[in-house]
Length: 138
Image 1 (cartoon, rainbow, N blue to C red):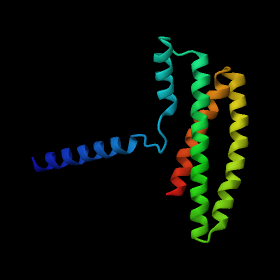
Image 2 (tube, rainbow, N blue to C red):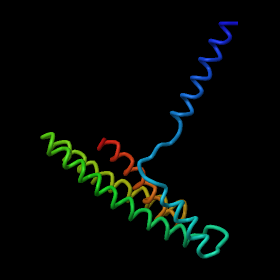
Image 3 (cartoon, one colour):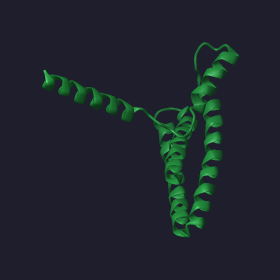
Image 4 (cartoon, rainbow, N blue to C red):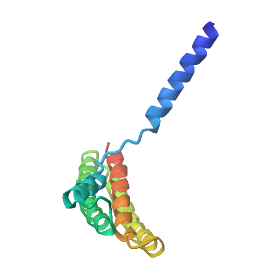
């Protein structure tokens, strides 16, 4: 009986831990989906279309770009305070390489998947990058 209770406790603890770990935690709000919902409601569309995807992708990307600049400024200040200029220089180098990668990868996505990807893909990548850089800044 005690063994069965112990096994149940271990299993329930493990399941709770896994589900808590599996939850997606992001530093950035889901501005894209908020925009889509608001646009569909405002225009009484009933469904999403390519124009909504493009508009909301562009708005979301602009938001992420501004936030990325803020986080990079924060990292720069941290690097100066900690006398680690190489940290900031390395991140800026990776930022330039990341940008080139995103430009090419999203061009590929647009060519092979379809035109909405020309704006949707970069927006997704900028959101991921914001989360990544935010993690670096902590």
